Image (tube, rainbow, N blue to C red; front, side, top):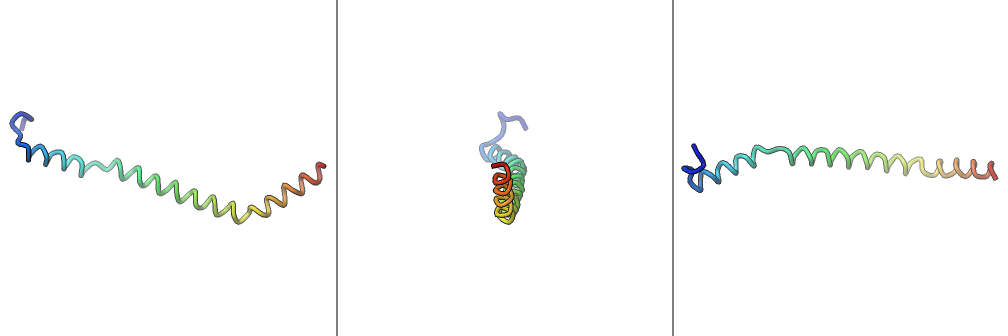
Length: 65
């Protein structure tokens, strides 16, 4: 069908189906969730070893002074 002969309802159906089949937004959301998960793991790891890293750097600072 050419665009000139399509009714308003047919044009709306085509737009809806095009929007429904577009999954680029879902991909962006998936990447966002992966990045958030990695960030949580990094923050958790730093929280667990933070005190020992601080102590190690303090030992190095004291040895240099």
